[in-house]
Image (cartoon, rainbow, N blue to C red; front, side):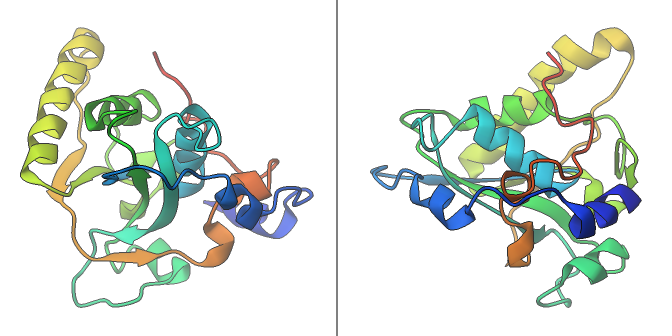
Length: 203
């Protein structure tokens, strides 16, 4: 977490205008769907999804928003500072609008597993705390079924052989709170900013 705090105050040149980047995002999907994932620091999760499913290249993602979800329902409008204490129990998460005619929900779930370590509870790399937990927040019974099926497949193929167990939570999507503006597209605005080392392609 210390690396993230330092990154906020000492990032390199901000050479990407997030509004210009968002303007590139596709808006012509006939029936867009929503996927919500938590996999540690939301800067890196958003960054790797957008790199591989670029809206500008129409690879399936329409837009992304980072924010907070899965926390104490009595806590309204949580902010970054309060979430980082662990007291609100919110996870840092990425909400993805996507075009299912280009990329399926199953593909996004598998990519989610490819790009972090889902076997560490409340931790990614050096980032520890409940806000860094691995979780899938589903938006329909169909998404729930797909998430469970893909999880079982990934477990059997990639983790059972090494004796590891996926600890990812699979929960119904609940109330969502957008993170502060400076968190949105953070690593596009700050290319030299902190990025968790687990946010890479693991297979």
